[in-house]
Image (tube, rainbow, N blue to C red; front, side, top):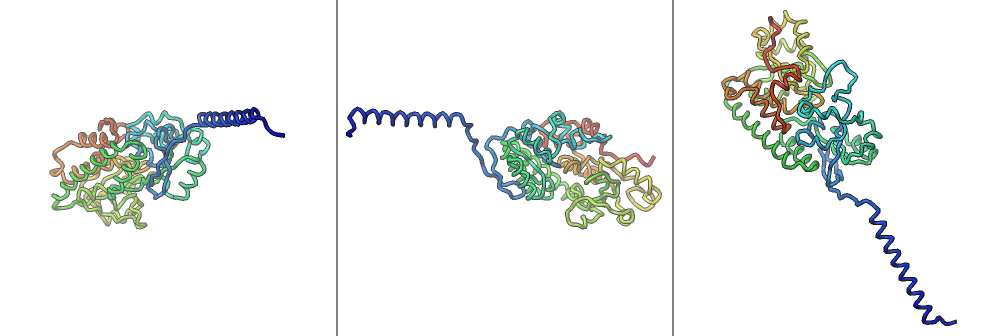
Length: 376
């Protein structure tokens, strides 16, 4: 049976109609689906290649030091939640919140919702961050966290010290790119370079290096004046002789020494971290007769407190304030052109991009860099 001309037209019309419907349905489906955000590949500070959204508006910083780095880049407005540790939610009799200076600069961090800790995967996912910033060291742990959360995890290095200034600058630059704060990262780096250059010019004028000891270091918990370090940046930058050796493990971190070693070293000056000044005073009183008889710094009463150096990671900004303070104590003629109050405010403004006064920080951290009054 032959098809009529009309039946052919009907078939073609039906095919065209079905094709038009298919095209329309495809277009509607495309409109209904959310547009996929473009990504870029960034190498983090552990050498991992991380696919990060081009636009970052919601972040969570995990583990010690990572939120401090975010605050340096004036990016706390992107933070949507914080950990319990260090943000006023610890089950503790003590107030730790202000021992990290960035929290004095950005007190509103305390009011953000809590995700508990890095182990609270459900809470982190529910918060819907675009990016996690973590200071975890182990690459396998970082990869596992990223896989579990389904959220990119960018690793930072909070163990880097200003001895390795180029790595410190590179981290600020990379994090600046990730968070869209490139200009701020450059401003911070240039300011630090200027400070280090200024201190170096002063150090070159030192003719008779003073011998000094750093004690009371906060590192994985409190300790008394016998927790020391052989790698104390203020001594190295101002041109003082550190009477203690570097950490025997080679990691350049604080460690416990002995009373015998302190006596043998007999420093002319002692500087004690404010975080442990109470315990350091108790340690002094327990050995007062020995120290006041055998150690030059205690005999001459040249014992001083410094700003908190390590609490929930390194307070790099306070480290630089301490550099200028140690310089003024050891070599007053080389550091006579400014007051510590002025220099500290300048450094805090550089790092946090908000004004902080000397008295404000001293009151919050319950200390002032000064000679101790234990000898009365």
